[in-house]
Image 1 (cartoon, rainbow, N blue to C red):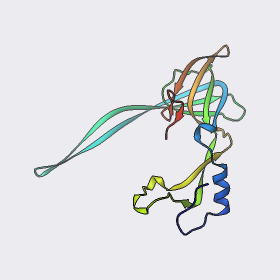
Image 2 (tube, helix red, strand yellow):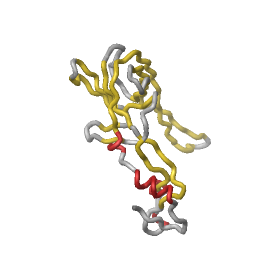
Image 3 (cartoon, helix red, strand yellow):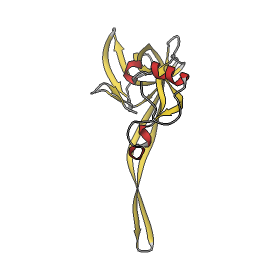
Image 4 (tube, helix red, strand yellow):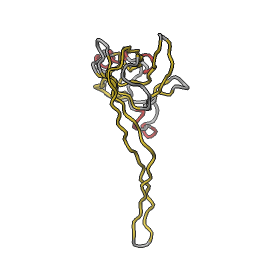
Length: 172
C-alpha cells in the first residue's frame, strides 16, 4: 500500500478504496445483445497553432485534423439498453454483438496520495486523487470495443478510441 509522505494520515475510507483498487484491464466485461438501432454522429476536430506575432499582426492557424465518430447503439440486453461507442463500426440494426465495457467506477480519495521523493520533482499527474474500483453495469455504458457475431462466431472486431487492440490495453 502506498505511504503518504505529507503530514495528513490516510483515512480508513481511503485505505479501503486503495485495497479495492483494480487495473482497468481487470474490469472489462462483455455485454451481449441484438442491436435495435444505431445513431451515428460525426464530430469534427481541429488543432489551432500559435504562429506568434509577425510585425504588427498576430497569426494563428487552424488545421482540421479529421472527424471522430460517436455511435449510439440500442441493445436488447436485460441491464444495458444503450451502448455509446467512440469509433467506426458497420454495425446495423439486427446484428448480434458483444460489446466490451469498463465495469468500473472512479472514486475520489479524501486525502491525495503523494509520490515519494522530493516535492520539487512531483508532477501533478503523479499525485493520486482517484482510484478505479469495480462497479455495476448501468443502462447506458461506453464500449471499448465491439465484436459483431454471426452464428456464435466473431466476424468483425471494431476498437474504439480508448482501446489499443494491438496491445490489448485501455488508453485514457
